[in-house]
Length: 76
Image 1 (cartoon, rainbow, N blue to C red):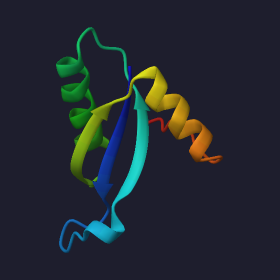
Image 2 (cartoon, helix red, strand yellow):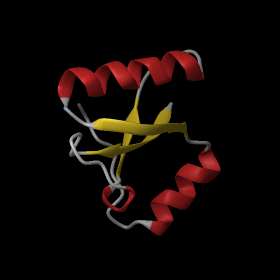
Image 3 (spheres, rainbow, N blue to C red):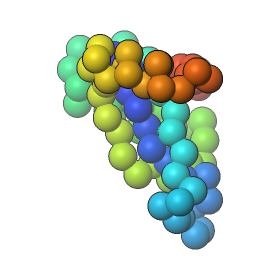
């Protein structure tokens, strides 16, 4: 499952204009289990402030890959 994570690098003064995105591929049986796993990974490996997590469908993933030529899945 590939998740799209919207996050802030600055927890002290988050601003919508500085929201960043990363993509994570996790092995999970359900969307809920994947979301929990993503939150745990980010909490352990970064100090990001997570705003939102989306599970990407194949159509959304294809769209994001086409829209962003620098698309890459992050490894934590």
